[in-house]
Length: 344
Length: 267
Image (cartoon, rainbow over all chains, first blue to last red; front, side, top):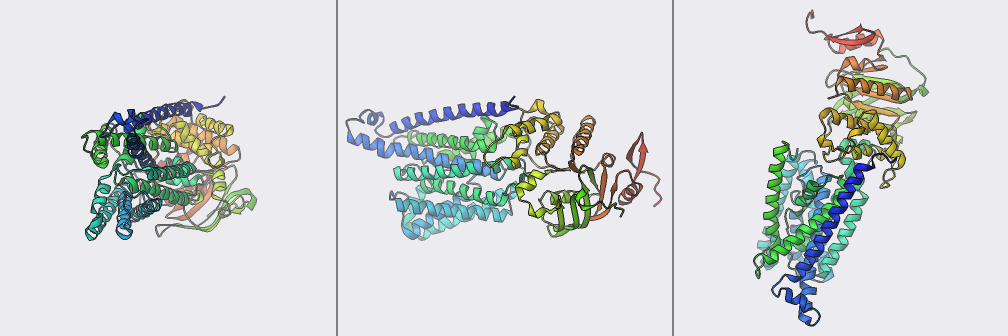
């Protein structure tokens, strides 16, 4: 007898189906993504003969779709990590202030070194990601410091809001002082996938693999934390060390995504919730699924942003903010009808 | 303070001048006691006596000063993992993720025995099955924690602590939300564990149930008032004293009970 394999197997099976469906969706969206644009399907049809069609598809549309997928994957991963780590369903890379920190880092990098998010040179991209990462990390630490820990939902969220507002104000101040970066910063603040090129995709893919591995390595901590902090510690886990490492991974994923797509809200918050509404599973198993879900979400949002008002474009961040906000509200009302609490 | 002093080797756990603080406030004030192998010890005292804090210290969750020896060696000399294999702790009212299945949750108790990321072995599965069966919770192994009643939930959490299969089991209010049949079940279980040579330490606010233990450690405001067998008259006297004579220990049908005294107090 292999006692009790059943629940694990059941959730594994659903998980496998969900993974398959989401991968299939990704492929379909990638195909659509390479077809949507001012020249439409013609570019796809002419791929073999027309070099400019090839250029449009290969150098503009595909990296953009793939980049949106990757940035979404990073945000979904960060969201699942944050919610597991802080044991708080409202924890989100954005609500913890890390996105504002990352955007401040980017603003500083642009103002001080004149790098632009349009840059395609590796060094500039790395510098931008590094600045965003440092900003995100410092912002999360500042939030945790202000909230004096993560136990109190309300204090954590309030601290996150305060850090977000203050760092956002600093970013605006930099913008005023260095007006040259205004245009670049504006598209950045609105959240945009339109500058994504292959080097950025490569970098995000690398970071996604790294963060995925690190998260997988520390996944027992997330599972144990589901029992409560003290119980996790009583199970002999080196809580403070793992926790710090996870905060670093969280900041790395958020920082990298923000460095390349700007402030794309709600993907990190919605993705884990969406997966959880379809499948109940352990926090560790949730990470991969939430990451994939975030990828599909942002890829779909990018497609919508490109096609809704075509030939004009919506900033993708505006779209995710509206859709994600609506989803969150719906989730809150659905939940409060069944159970009185969401957070505490 | 009456203490029959056995030789050192008899003690599973021994404390000398144990001191602990919580947020700068002293919660344990120089406790010195010994818990023997194969015994069930009840920690009893009025609210704020330091019972839960004592259990947290023993579980390695709260820093302490003084000496604490586990099987003759300083507790601090054990790695966190080894300590977790030897000592299991069931806390009181910790919030748990409602989305976990009962089986997955109880399996987390096997974590101290698993290599990092190795996943459960056949013996882990067997231990989880034993623990779930002991708490009569095997039937709901596929259910989510959020779908259970408070009492069912408590039994699952108990099973999680049992699944560690530790030598020392620390339980803080293990009977909260349990109905009388399951309280009786728990008593039988503790007796079985103790007969296997394990040491069980429980904090119970229900003094009549606490009196079913072998030994009693009575605390008040972080100080140790008494340690002795639950059947001793001196223990009963100390109990009545720390509870300001609002309880009286009496024998009924062969078991000691703590009867509340609501009226008829002179002072």
